[in-house]
Length: 614
Image (cartoon, rainbow, N blue to C red; front, side, top):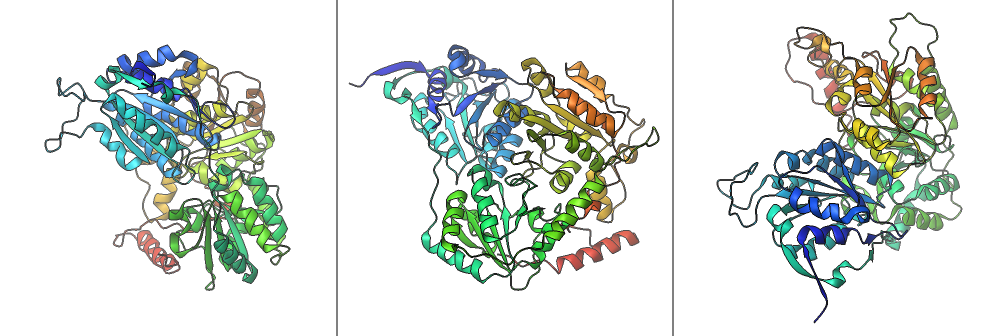
């Protein structure tokens, strides 16, 4: 008879997770974020306490934001390592659904372990239990099903023998990577079972690098040879594949310019002569000009989100051919593209070898230089201004840029700053981290903490607006308690400035976005400096753009989070730097104002330019 170990199901989960390794000899699941309640404290809580340093546990302030920290950690680790997050049942669990959606959209690994109801059903309905009148198997955790790559409910201790390996298989699969939810019935967590000892032997999980079909590579090489104006769209898959050097070599060797998505930005340093900047709605004039003329667009590791494609109105060449290199066939074949299914690094290297010494016509470098000059002018220090002057977001970005180093990582998630940073930030390789697949307000501060945990040698600068800060700021206290240093640049424009501008661009009137146009009795005077300081952070208000630069440098020396507050102008967006493109946001077909009628006419005009896709 084979040797067995008698453990509770929770103990078995913790023990198994502690011995799942990367090829570098580290734990794949670095540790567990936990907020305990009656659905996990007696089972997983005890098991994690017993595991100690073999599987560290960290306490967060909110289930959603501690999951955001775990997701940012995985993204900054290029999906080579991940974290787990556990909650109680009910609201603790459903708080994590937003984070699951974020991870699902961005194809990032996180292990979510919400507590669940009693499998034996004896005490039903327990506190926080959702009862479905027509389905006795439903619990609140079924909310995770559409936003999980793999979902399982652990209703017997031996379910772990199959569920845990399946979970790690998904999290380490480059094509199917994403969030895994193991809903863990609270009584089952505490039940004992004789597990095979072999189940707990160390296992190394390899991140596979699937090779593309040589026939597809040959066909794509033929398309490149025929193209007069090819362009390559760099997506996040380039970074997860660790294909940055392969991309740089391919672009230089074959004279094919690179344009970027939010996820792919900083795979090439902005200083690289073949990097023409971001594409699409928040793209550079140089990148968008290339896109309009391109007769061959090759996406590498991108899903061609609407911001990148200008809602499919960006590519105007009637002879356009679309190709996509992607490890996931679903993405490779999108929009009628010629799909090459395979790892980005492997595919670029094999395509380059197939092309030999072929070089496309040289792209005009002047458009790139003109755009960068416009960026520098747009982001310049405005100099001496009246005391009540509020700088633009671009001027704030310029200040941080001038104070940054090759070691700086700029990060953000939602609002004005993602588009502004994509257009204006000039990173070194690896100097950019944006959650824009889900564009989730509240990711920023928790995400900055996760990035710093994954890359402690980097300087992490978090751009966050007052709207996102008000939604989720509590993990700042966690970072203070754990002495995790990063810098928060909090731009206060007194509301949701980005959406206020979009509202007006769609023909609407200012309404319910800025505090000034909201139904409030008193205009708020929120002291963000005092608020951040109350959680233990070092907090200051920048008196000017020059002072902001100085405060960035000073923050670099601290071993704790620093928050720098700067009031900004809510009316001006980033587009004045030479860039931008139409975005398909539906405009009301019927309206009373001339402004709305004009917006709808413009909408129809742009809709007519959209490329029909399948």
